[in-house]
Length: 235
Image: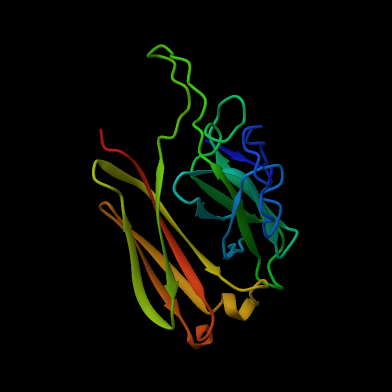
């Protein structure tokens, strides 16, 4: 899989889709004649000084029957590098490059201190019409595909401590895990609000578990944590 560095990708769905697209909160629906905008929360980006820098992953999913046709993001800081995970193939197109979900990658490349870096992801969802076909290859040469499936669970964070866990589906095995915090606020959350949540991850067997803590400042604020299990086929 390749991390596509263009933050906004808009692909025309086709002349047969003659319905005007609704206006999204950003530009995720630009160029799409039929589009359902989906917005994520303000995702917290880790601040690190080492090389390589830490990054955060956050997944947004279209309604059933729709596929990601456009992406966009809004940043609280210009030093945030945002991209999304895409699959190789030609042409770059919904159904080839994207699927029903889009995984955003955020990395803070600035200096520590100041406001907490966050980004808000957006996807534009178009009706699923199928992707391009793959050309058969020999056994010794295989085209890149989607060997990893991200099983995501997103739950609300409340004051106190709890454990959020996610597993792979039957017939899959766990190959990794990650988690991210987000705030469903109209503007980027303050540094003190970002500091009101914390988590520690543990992988045991086929289970990703995150111990999540929230303090009293969360009262009246909708914060979420997303736990992802990175899964592949067991065979």
